[in-house]
Length: 326
Image (tube, rainbow, N blue to C red; front, side, top):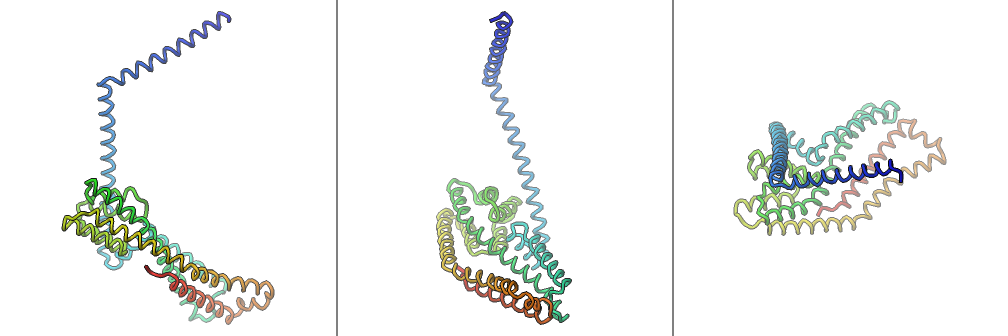
C-alpha cells in the first residue's frame, strides 16, 4: 500500500471515530436529568397546545351545528325533514336528491326535444313532473334503507364500546363523544353531533330526543331510553346495554335470514325487469320496420309509456312483498 493510501485510510478511520465519539457524547448529554426534564416539558407543552387546538376546533364545530339546528328548528316541519335528509345521507342527502332531480329533469327535457313523450299536450306535463318526483322519492327511500342497514350494523359495536367505557368509569357523555370520533359514518357522525351538543352544555334528554327524531329507528330509541333511565335511577348501565346489544344482534341475524329466504322474489323481479328489454331488442333486430312504429307514432309512444309505468308498478309491488320488515 502506497503512503498516500495509508494516509487516506487513517484519515477516514479518524473521521469515523470522531463521529462515533460525538454521537456517544450527545446521547450521554441527553440522558442527564436536566435534559430529560426539558424534553418532557417540551413534549407536554406541545401536547397541551395540540389539545387546546383540538378543543377549540370542537367548540367551533359544536357552535356551528347549534346555530344550524336552531335555524332548522325555526323552520318547523321543513327543518325536521332537512335534518332527517342530512342524517340519512351522511351530510350529502340534499345534494344527492338535487342531483337525481336535475338528471331526470334533463332526461325528460331531452325526451321532449326528440319527441319521445306521448303526443297529447295534457299528458306530457304530468309525465315531465311525475318522473323527477318519483325518481327523487325512490332515491330517498334507497338512502333510508342504506342508512338503516349501516347504522344497525354499527350500533351493537358502539354499545359494546360504551359498556366497556362505563365499566372503566368513563361518564356516558364522554363515551358518546369518543364513539363519534372513533366510528365511521353514519353512526359516527350522529354520535359526534350528540357529543358536540353535550359539549355546549345541553341536557342529555334533549340531545337524545333530537337524535331519535333524526335517526328514527326503534333500536336507537331503546338505546336512548337505557341512557336516560340510568341517569334517572342510577342503575347499572352495562347490563342493560349488553342485553339490548344482544337483542339488536339477534334482530340483525333474523333480518339476514329473511333476506336470504326472500332472495328468490328479488331475483324474479330482476329477471322480470330485464326480460321486456331483451324481448324488445330481439324483436327489433328481427323486424325493425314494425318496431319503429312504437317510436314514430303517437299511439306507439303512449303504449311504451304505459308499459313502462305498469312494469315499474309491478316491480315495486314484488319488491314490497319480498322485503319483509323485522
